[in-house]
Length: 332
Length: 290
Image (cartoon, rainbow over all chains, first blue to last red; front, side):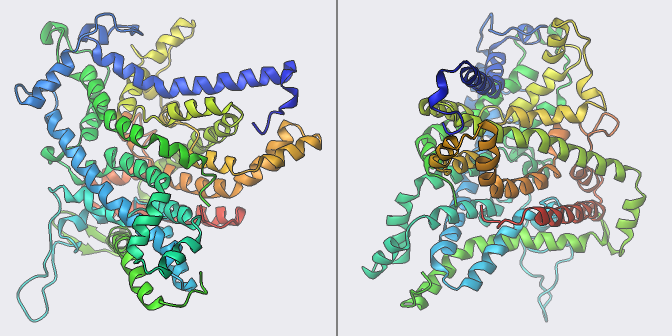
């Protein structure tokens, strides 16, 4: 409590300020959690109540029919006709993209951050590599969007005319990543400049003496990293891990561009995104569809709830570390 | 650490092994496509033909009636998103640290709970509906006339900034930086008789300055590339009021399949951003280390 003096807390003016600040912050928390609350409520409403104006704050006739339909499609008993891909497959795709890209991002960024912090002694090289990585932060990703898409077609060449190996008739080996899971996973190997920065900043805070002592004892660099550095730096792994999870799980733009028309590869976020585009506010006619129509707004809300569950799980796993990461006084 | 010369040969090999995945990844997936962009922008690159056309794409772009509109929209959105979703988390973080420790903890957990995501965009689009959206219901309830929200060209861009505001929370980095300021500074200032504003102005803000410099830059670069909200909620409408540069690039590149032209659009964005980065560097001379 640095700003508001401790001594004068009893004064009316100071007290009013404290009350105002507290209210402001709690209102902020409420606004932040509001969409989730409304989603949960809407996913439990039947079609008639979901489209009621004004909307009901608390669900009057809670019903799990949408979740039951999704569950049935998970078991393969029935399919949901209003979306192009079964929710189970979309969830599986999302998990593949996320796990795949997290297992590339985190080690790549951690190793690079460690090398920059503790292994590359040559100041010039260190600076050059650091700038080479960090400069990507200041380059708009928009420029490389179309080229990246073209590269993925005939990796690593960008044009349709693949050059021939000199003196032979064969073309250079190339891979078409479009239409495979790799298209969204492989680019994660770059690690991300911001993650490298976070790791480097954290490892800089670990004293060199600990590492040098282990080196004198004959420990290999890898075992120093695994046995000494890793246990000390769980908070930064939590921060980067959660960030990497969010980036991969919610990678809407990448999915939109690379997976055009390949419906079987759609992740959950793209299915919901299509629901957002389609949403015009029209109520599906209950005369035609019936009260328990699985589609439109309530279905999308249920899918959004399912989409946010892995985030919750990640957050619960990493919560303690994240809070420690905050207490760790800065990233410098 | 530079003094440690012994065993530097082995260490160099290990260092290369450690840095290699990241460097290879960044080379192939960041720099290679980036420089290819400059090649593709000078070509007529569509499904059937690949032809070097020199500056033709850029000439067409500057004669394109849509071009000034998308530039204006992009700057407008960047301005709005710096004015609201960038500044509010800083204020929230400063105020949050005034709370009791236990309250900070609970609030942080609630704020970092990943609530929403793609679903909240859908929810907002629903709320904006002029006929049965929540926002117009509130306005009616207050006795005010309803608004057209996303259908109103003057209002649509402001509506798109709102998701950023709902997702706001005190960023981890702000909290961490604020916590690194020693309490003694504030206590000393208090003894000197400094008030609330003096403390914020002379102790808090100078400490935040280097971080603000970095994140402001990244936030400008990010918001100049806004795509998702506009693509999902308005599709660029009404009357192109929310069509941004990146969205126009998407329209040209992936919908009309004019890859060369689309990349030329992106390169103009790159040039604009580079100029802005240089200007910003002139004002904030701090190191780029986070």
